[in-house]
Image (tube, rainbow, N blue to C red; front, side, top):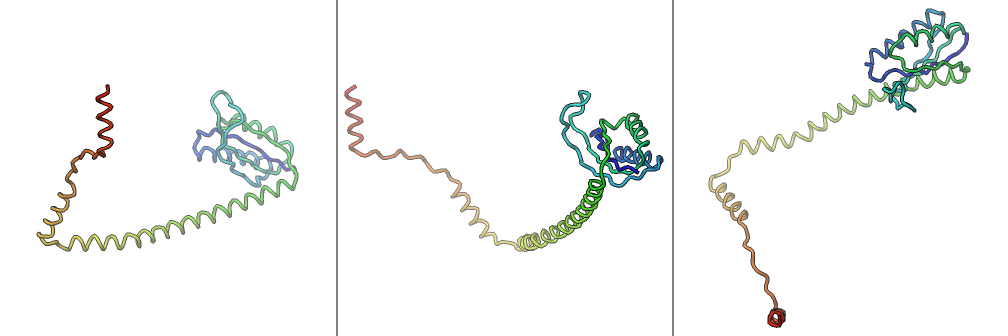
Length: 191
């Protein structure tokens, strides 16, 4: 058995389910021809180096590692040519070191994804608890203010203070020193 890797660029406009259909069809083609799919790495959406068919500037990349006999290559190429979602593909023979490194990377990514999901759920729970604790004193204070009634005299005095502070101040002309005023008058008389 030979070791191969396939780089697939899938149309980015397709839904995630359609991406999985293409990958499931590829793995079915490989297993039907006595091969074995080892790892599938999702490289996500990336910008293409150049525009393809005057409409694709981005593509969703997948890297698939599998082991099979050399006679399987035309079958896989035929599958890619028939499938509409595949923009480009490249099949390359690899050595065992790259094959094992890809398997290790896939395992690490899966573990990191699980860890990130666990941390995210813990962070959401703690944020919900914090917001409940922060809002508790505010809610208590609002309830106290609602229940407490202020005397009418106090309200009237508060309204008077607000009215006084809202009055506009009148504009006064600045005072000019007498010496400056004399010079201004002299200059005005000279002209």
